[in-house]
Image (cartoon, rainbow over all chains, first blue to last red):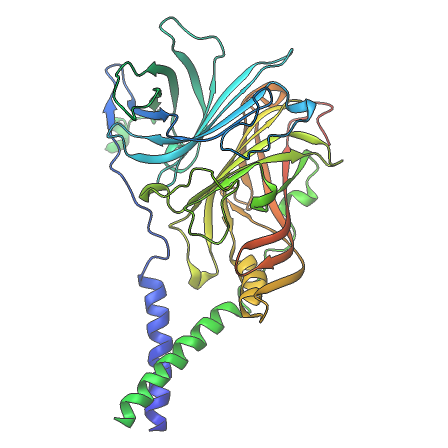
Length: 196
Length: 231
């Protein structure tokens, strides 16, 4: 019986090690990306935010209370003119695929609008927007950096507010549309001589 | 029958021994000195509250160890973001003055390998410092030392808590020396590529609510001298 017990210990050790090796401790849920090939090269992907449903936080020195209720936004003078919003972001199928932060800051020296999009299964994107909007209500910004899947990519992102004109009950007030355009790093093609 | 019981008992003991071996494995050592603690580059040092109740806002799936703050903040319950948390917090400079605001997104990483002592989190920081500009920090963090030396003792304690003084670096990549990749987006740091390390100092931890007394720190090293950007 003692031999069986020791055999059980060995099997238990092996089973625990095998399970930990074979079964992933983390398995992120992935939504299939809806990426389109842009006509002038590169790829594009659209995200949107339903406002106010997808707004997690709104902190603004000039606004009483902020969102959610109970939020205590710092009143320090250094942060005067800084507005930060946290959102859930959705893909073209209206499925939540990530979270994002938009920060807008105005000061005498420098006005800033930045986005960071975080898609857990894919990586993050950091976009520094041009502060002045373009014709049509667009604002465009350059992808300044990215992580994991987005690491080797460069490109642009536009943001646009689209108001909801429908009179449906529970409809969002509007949505923020984010259109990203990715361009991969150029890699030299192998020449015929190299192949030979 | 007694052989079956004996075998099952052995299996349970074997599995428990494996878990104990994993926790107390002497070959999984702490990384030691931060690579940025010996850098000659100018650094920005920022500290922040990482206890959810002391942050501006913190949210997760609502079922994890840390409770969302404020209470009515939107929770991240949808499947693709269920293992993600988001925190907005005040960033302070080395003198304790408000320097800006930071937002951190953290997601459980599929590169987690508990057998190797790696409990990995993929995280991204956005930091806005009115004096310097905006920063994006991309990093992988290893929470295994914190789990092993703080969370596990708290879980074992009869009071379900741990008190002490634990200080460690969380950042383990993606830089070759275990540093985070930092990009300047605007202001005086615009266009700069830098390195960073996030560390955490824990004084109290509860197995029921997580961090009770703790402070985080970000050190960002700038290899290009901008003049007058040190704190």
